[in-house]
Image (cartoon, rainbow, N blue to C red; front, side, top):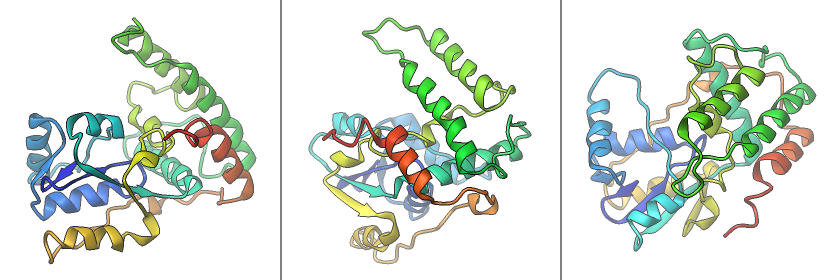
Length: 238
């Protein structure tokens, strides 16, 4: 998201992106998501009573549209992102009446790791359709639906498939390629950058996932699992 034609903010799932984008729009900054219709939709959405949502795109997407702009990304410890993504998935399924295969709130570290090892293995095996690889969108969607039915819920039609993107590595989105990386625990640094444009700016925090309590904690097992199964193939890319 290009902010006031000055720099691009890279919105990474589970790295405070909803709070940041909502706040930027709320304070009526001039922004560009790289799509005229999307720009209008985001402001129209803000002015309606509908639940707020936004898109996520990669570093390459924004760099292709705004090649000469500096980029800023927010870093969050990957194990925290994983737990947050799991909380959000459980919360959204509860709110939308989607029955899950497992009571994720009660599972321990070992049980969670066993389930998500299968999910990530299958997800890595599903190639996304591109212009060059001749993979049909229909086949791709069928593969994703089968993954969801095997591992998450039989109600795959009402399961928001975007939840799977929340579990993808922050390096998949291109965090390690950003010119400036700010730790999520120090969001005041990002706020101070924005305040140089509008001194009265304040960040509006939007996080409902704290209402979900999980049995798993930020243990060594979870940290090791996340490093090996989520971040492993992206850590060395620059």
